[in-house]
Image (cartoon, rainbow, N blue to C red; front, side, top):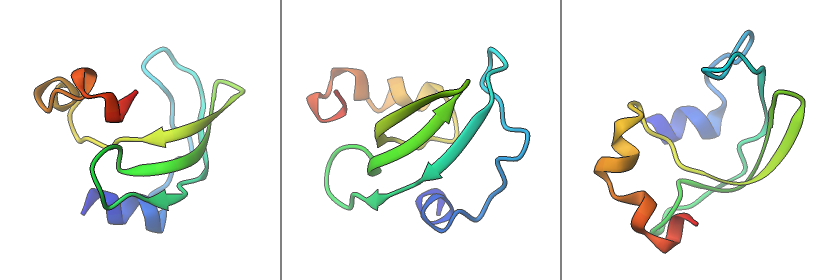
Length: 77
């Protein structure tokens, strides 16, 4: 469900900020990865005025990154 919300852009990022108060803008959610690895490939996101291009993994809770062992999985490098 979370992936569908992301790909459809069925949410508002107006006023979205990181924990350290940088503005967040999602330009392109891009290509849904239905295989192993990050949820989306080749996304474009602006954080604090800097553009980032790359893969996106979505979780509802920050601790899920660790619980799913993504940091130890080379698919998430």
